[in-house]
Length: 285
Image 1 (tube, rainbow, N blue to C red):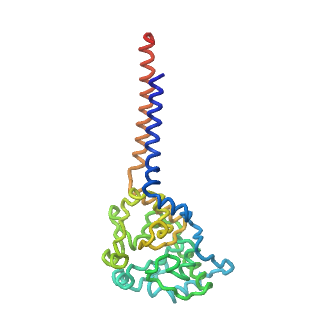
Image 2: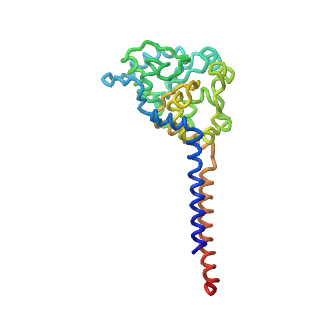
Image 3: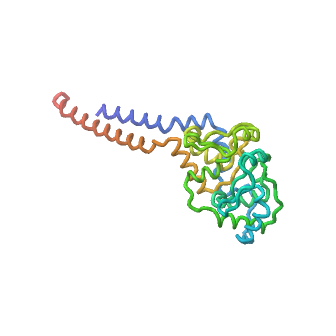
Protein backbone atom coordinates (compact mmCIF):
# COMPACT_ATOMS: atom_id res chain seq x y z
CA UNK A 1 0.00 0.00 0.00
CA UNK A 2 2.92 2.35 0.76
CA UNK A 3 4.25 1.92 -2.80
CA UNK A 4 0.83 2.66 -4.24
CA UNK A 5 0.59 5.91 -2.28
CA UNK A 6 4.04 6.94 -3.53
CA UNK A 7 2.92 6.21 -7.11
CA UNK A 8 -0.22 8.31 -6.71
CA UNK A 9 1.80 11.23 -5.34
CA UNK A 10 4.23 11.00 -8.28
CA UNK A 11 1.39 10.91 -10.81
CA UNK A 12 -0.23 13.98 -9.24
CA UNK A 13 3.07 15.88 -9.29
CA UNK A 14 3.68 14.99 -12.94
CA UNK A 15 0.18 16.11 -13.93
CA UNK A 16 0.58 19.39 -12.06
CA UNK A 17 3.91 19.94 -13.79
CA UNK A 18 2.48 19.11 -17.22
CA UNK A 19 -0.73 21.11 -17.04
CA UNK A 20 0.16 23.73 -14.46
CA UNK A 21 3.67 25.03 -15.03
CA UNK A 22 3.19 26.25 -18.61
CA UNK A 23 0.04 28.31 -17.89
CA UNK A 24 1.73 29.74 -14.78
CA UNK A 25 4.86 30.66 -16.75
CA UNK A 26 2.72 32.20 -19.48
CA UNK A 27 0.80 34.32 -16.99
CA UNK A 28 4.09 35.62 -15.54
CA UNK A 29 6.15 36.09 -18.72
CA UNK A 30 3.27 37.35 -20.87
CA UNK A 31 1.27 39.19 -18.25
CA UNK A 32 0.54 42.11 -20.60
CA UNK A 33 -1.10 39.71 -23.07
CA UNK A 34 -3.36 38.22 -20.39
CA UNK A 35 -4.26 41.73 -19.22
CA UNK A 36 -5.08 42.90 -22.76
CA UNK A 37 -7.23 39.85 -23.45
CA UNK A 38 -9.15 40.51 -20.23
CA UNK A 39 -9.37 44.28 -20.72
CA UNK A 40 -10.76 44.12 -24.26
CA UNK A 41 -12.70 40.88 -23.73
CA UNK A 42 -10.94 39.20 -26.64
CA UNK A 43 -11.91 37.77 -28.96
CA UNK A 44 -14.64 40.38 -29.40
CA UNK A 45 -16.78 39.14 -32.27
CA UNK A 46 -19.31 41.88 -31.54
CA UNK A 47 -16.67 44.51 -32.47
CA UNK A 48 -18.01 46.52 -29.57
CA UNK A 49 -15.90 49.61 -30.25
CA UNK A 50 -17.35 50.11 -33.72
CA UNK A 51 -20.44 51.98 -34.83
CA UNK A 52 -23.63 49.85 -34.96
CA UNK A 53 -25.08 48.93 -38.33
CA UNK A 54 -28.23 50.66 -39.59
CA UNK A 55 -30.46 47.57 -39.41
CA UNK A 56 -33.43 49.57 -40.65
CA UNK A 57 -31.75 49.80 -44.06
CA UNK A 58 -31.95 46.67 -46.19
CA UNK A 59 -29.24 46.00 -48.72
CA UNK A 60 -29.94 45.06 -52.34
CA UNK A 61 -27.37 42.81 -54.03
CA UNK A 62 -28.18 44.06 -57.53
CA UNK A 63 -27.61 47.68 -56.59
CA UNK A 64 -24.59 46.55 -54.60
CA UNK A 65 -22.97 45.08 -57.71
CA UNK A 66 -23.42 48.39 -59.51
CA UNK A 67 -21.87 50.24 -56.56
CA UNK A 68 -18.92 47.84 -56.46
CA UNK A 69 -18.30 48.27 -60.18
CA UNK A 70 -18.42 52.03 -59.72
CA UNK A 71 -16.27 52.36 -56.58
CA UNK A 72 -14.19 49.20 -56.14
CA UNK A 73 -13.12 47.53 -59.38
CA UNK A 74 -10.49 50.15 -60.18
CA UNK A 75 -8.38 48.41 -57.50
CA UNK A 76 -10.03 45.04 -56.80
CA UNK A 77 -10.84 41.97 -58.85
CA UNK A 78 -13.87 39.72 -58.24
CA UNK A 79 -13.14 36.24 -59.57
CA UNK A 80 -16.54 34.96 -58.44
CA UNK A 81 -18.20 37.40 -60.86
CA UNK A 82 -15.58 37.13 -63.64
CA UNK A 83 -14.21 40.62 -62.97
CA UNK A 84 -10.41 40.53 -63.32
CA UNK A 85 -8.04 42.57 -61.17
CA UNK A 86 -7.08 45.80 -62.97
CA UNK A 87 -3.34 45.27 -62.30
CA UNK A 88 -0.99 42.34 -61.97
CA UNK A 89 0.07 41.58 -58.35
CA UNK A 90 3.53 43.15 -58.59
CA UNK A 91 2.25 46.40 -60.11
CA UNK A 92 -0.60 46.56 -57.59
CA UNK A 93 1.78 45.95 -54.69
CA UNK A 94 4.14 48.67 -55.91
CA UNK A 95 1.19 51.07 -56.15
CA UNK A 96 -0.48 50.33 -52.80
CA UNK A 97 2.17 48.63 -50.64
CA UNK A 98 0.23 45.35 -50.66
CA UNK A 99 -1.85 43.50 -53.25
CA UNK A 100 -5.51 44.58 -52.87
CA UNK A 101 -7.73 41.60 -51.97
CA UNK A 102 -10.02 39.90 -54.42
CA UNK A 103 -13.55 40.63 -53.18
CA UNK A 104 -15.09 37.26 -54.01
CA UNK A 105 -15.18 35.72 -50.53
CA UNK A 106 -14.88 38.62 -48.11
CA UNK A 107 -18.63 38.48 -47.51
CA UNK A 108 -18.18 35.06 -45.90
CA UNK A 109 -14.98 35.83 -44.01
CA UNK A 110 -15.64 39.27 -42.54
CA UNK A 111 -18.08 40.24 -39.84
CA UNK A 112 -20.93 42.37 -41.25
CA UNK A 113 -20.56 45.10 -38.63
CA UNK A 114 -16.83 45.34 -39.27
CA UNK A 115 -17.40 45.43 -43.03
CA UNK A 116 -19.92 48.24 -42.63
CA UNK A 117 -17.46 50.27 -40.59
CA UNK A 118 -14.59 49.42 -42.92
CA UNK A 119 -16.47 50.72 -45.97
CA UNK A 120 -17.32 53.87 -44.03
CA UNK A 121 -13.82 54.53 -42.62
CA UNK A 122 -11.11 51.91 -43.38
CA UNK A 123 -8.38 53.45 -41.20
CA UNK A 124 -10.63 53.65 -38.13
CA UNK A 125 -12.07 50.15 -38.52
CA UNK A 126 -8.68 48.50 -39.04
CA UNK A 127 -6.91 50.68 -36.45
CA UNK A 128 -4.21 51.08 -39.09
CA UNK A 129 -3.65 54.67 -40.29
CA UNK A 130 -1.29 53.57 -43.09
CA UNK A 131 -3.93 51.52 -44.87
CA UNK A 132 -4.00 52.24 -48.60
CA UNK A 133 -7.78 51.98 -48.81
CA UNK A 134 -9.33 55.48 -48.63
CA UNK A 135 -12.75 56.41 -47.28
CA UNK A 136 -15.01 56.43 -50.34
CA UNK A 137 -17.72 58.73 -48.98
CA UNK A 138 -20.40 56.05 -49.34
CA UNK A 139 -23.78 56.56 -47.70
CA UNK A 140 -25.42 53.88 -45.55
CA UNK A 141 -27.65 52.57 -48.34
CA UNK A 142 -24.72 52.11 -50.70
CA UNK A 143 -22.73 50.33 -47.98
CA UNK A 144 -25.58 47.98 -47.12
CA UNK A 145 -26.08 47.23 -50.82
CA UNK A 146 -22.38 46.40 -51.23
CA UNK A 147 -22.48 44.11 -48.19
CA UNK A 148 -25.54 42.32 -49.60
CA UNK A 149 -23.74 41.81 -52.93
CA UNK A 150 -20.54 40.57 -51.31
CA UNK A 151 -22.45 38.08 -49.19
CA UNK A 152 -24.39 36.86 -52.22
CA UNK A 153 -21.26 35.92 -54.21
CA UNK A 154 -19.11 34.54 -51.37
CA UNK A 155 -18.31 30.85 -51.09
CA UNK A 156 -20.13 29.51 -48.06
CA UNK A 157 -18.19 26.29 -47.36
CA UNK A 158 -14.53 27.32 -47.35
CA UNK A 159 -12.18 25.03 -45.46
CA UNK A 160 -9.43 26.24 -43.15
CA UNK A 161 -6.74 26.35 -45.82
CA UNK A 162 -8.91 28.40 -48.18
CA UNK A 163 -9.94 30.79 -45.40
CA UNK A 164 -6.31 31.26 -44.32
CA UNK A 165 -5.07 32.01 -47.82
CA UNK A 166 -8.00 34.33 -48.56
CA UNK A 167 -7.65 36.26 -45.29
CA UNK A 168 -3.87 36.22 -44.78
CA UNK A 169 -2.15 35.22 -48.02
CA UNK A 170 -1.53 38.74 -49.31
CA UNK A 171 1.02 39.33 -46.55
CA UNK A 172 1.94 35.96 -45.02
CA UNK A 173 3.66 32.92 -46.52
CA UNK A 174 3.28 29.30 -45.40
CA UNK A 175 6.54 27.88 -46.74
CA UNK A 176 6.10 24.38 -45.33
CA UNK A 177 2.87 24.18 -47.35
CA UNK A 178 4.61 25.65 -50.40
CA UNK A 179 2.48 28.80 -50.33
CA UNK A 180 4.17 32.16 -50.82
CA UNK A 181 2.65 35.58 -50.20
CA UNK A 182 1.06 37.38 -53.13
CA UNK A 183 2.90 40.57 -52.27
CA UNK A 184 6.68 40.54 -52.88
CA UNK A 185 8.51 40.50 -49.50
CA UNK A 186 10.68 43.53 -50.32
CA UNK A 187 7.57 45.62 -50.98
CA UNK A 188 5.94 44.38 -47.76
CA UNK A 189 9.06 45.33 -45.82
CA UNK A 190 9.00 48.83 -47.28
CA UNK A 191 5.27 49.23 -46.57
CA UNK A 192 5.06 47.61 -43.11
CA UNK A 193 8.59 48.06 -41.79
CA UNK A 194 9.39 44.33 -41.85
CA UNK A 195 8.31 41.16 -43.60
CA UNK A 196 5.30 39.62 -41.81
CA UNK A 197 6.02 36.23 -40.17
CA UNK A 198 5.70 32.93 -42.00
CA UNK A 199 2.71 30.91 -40.76
CA UNK A 200 4.21 27.41 -41.01
CA UNK A 201 4.77 26.94 -37.26
CA UNK A 202 3.22 30.13 -35.86
CA UNK A 203 0.64 28.13 -33.91
CA UNK A 204 3.35 26.23 -32.00
CA UNK A 205 5.24 29.45 -31.35
CA UNK A 206 2.31 31.57 -30.15
CA UNK A 207 -0.52 29.22 -29.24
CA UNK A 208 -4.14 29.21 -30.35
CA UNK A 209 -5.45 31.63 -27.70
CA UNK A 210 -2.90 34.28 -28.64
CA UNK A 211 -3.52 33.88 -32.38
CA UNK A 212 -7.29 34.23 -32.02
CA UNK A 213 -6.98 37.31 -29.78
CA UNK A 214 -4.28 38.92 -31.93
CA UNK A 215 -6.16 38.46 -35.19
CA UNK A 216 -9.28 39.84 -33.56
CA UNK A 217 -7.59 43.04 -32.38
CA UNK A 218 -3.83 43.30 -33.05
CA UNK A 219 -3.30 46.76 -31.55
CA UNK A 220 -4.67 45.64 -28.18
CA UNK A 221 -2.03 42.93 -27.79
CA UNK A 222 0.84 44.63 -29.60
CA UNK A 223 0.42 48.42 -29.75
CA UNK A 224 2.09 49.92 -32.81
CA UNK A 225 2.08 46.67 -34.78
CA UNK A 226 1.85 46.89 -38.57
CA UNK A 227 -0.88 44.26 -38.56
CA UNK A 228 -4.28 45.83 -39.25
CA UNK A 229 -7.49 44.50 -37.73
CA UNK A 230 -9.06 42.50 -40.56
CA UNK A 231 -12.49 41.90 -39.04
CA UNK A 232 -12.89 38.14 -39.34
CA UNK A 233 -16.11 36.61 -38.06
CA UNK A 234 -16.04 33.82 -35.48
CA UNK A 235 -16.45 30.97 -37.95
CA UNK A 236 -13.59 32.12 -40.18
CA UNK A 237 -11.33 32.72 -37.17
CA UNK A 238 -11.95 29.22 -35.83
CA UNK A 239 -11.23 27.65 -39.23
CA UNK A 240 -7.96 29.55 -39.58
CA UNK A 241 -6.82 28.79 -36.02
CA UNK A 242 -7.60 25.09 -36.49
CA UNK A 243 -5.77 24.95 -39.82
CA UNK A 244 -2.68 26.70 -38.42
CA UNK A 245 -2.69 24.21 -35.55
CA UNK A 246 -2.87 21.28 -37.97
CA UNK A 247 0.00 22.38 -40.19
CA UNK A 248 2.21 23.41 -37.26
CA UNK A 249 1.94 19.97 -35.67
CA UNK A 250 0.53 17.53 -38.26
CA UNK A 251 1.33 14.45 -36.14
CA UNK A 252 -0.29 15.71 -32.94
CA UNK A 253 -3.40 13.52 -33.18
CA UNK A 254 -1.40 10.36 -33.91
CA UNK A 255 1.07 11.19 -31.14
CA UNK A 256 -1.76 11.77 -28.67
CA UNK A 257 -3.31 8.39 -29.48
CA UNK A 258 0.05 6.64 -29.05
CA UNK A 259 0.62 8.49 -25.77
CA UNK A 260 -2.75 7.40 -24.40
CA UNK A 261 -2.01 3.82 -25.44
CA UNK A 262 1.37 3.90 -23.70
CA UNK A 263 -0.17 5.28 -20.51
CA UNK A 264 -2.85 2.58 -20.51
CA UNK A 265 -0.20 -0.09 -21.07
CA UNK A 266 1.83 1.28 -18.17
CA UNK A 267 -1.21 1.31 -15.89
CA UNK A 268 -1.98 -2.30 -16.74
CA UNK A 269 1.63 -3.34 -16.13
CA UNK A 270 1.71 -1.44 -12.83
CA UNK A 271 -1.44 -3.24 -11.74
CA UNK A 272 -0.02 -6.65 -12.71
CA UNK A 273 3.31 -5.88 -11.02
CA UNK A 274 1.57 -4.82 -7.83
CA UNK A 275 -0.60 -7.95 -7.85
CA UNK A 276 2.49 -10.13 -8.41
CA UNK A 277 4.33 -8.37 -5.57
CA UNK A 278 1.39 -8.92 -3.20
CA UNK A 279 1.27 -12.62 -4.09
CA UNK A 280 5.01 -13.23 -3.80
CA UNK A 281 5.46 -11.32 -0.54
CA UNK A 282 2.25 -12.27 1.20
CA UNK A 283 4.06 -14.65 3.47
CA UNK A 284 6.62 -12.03 4.52
CA UNK A 285 4.30 -9.22 5.62
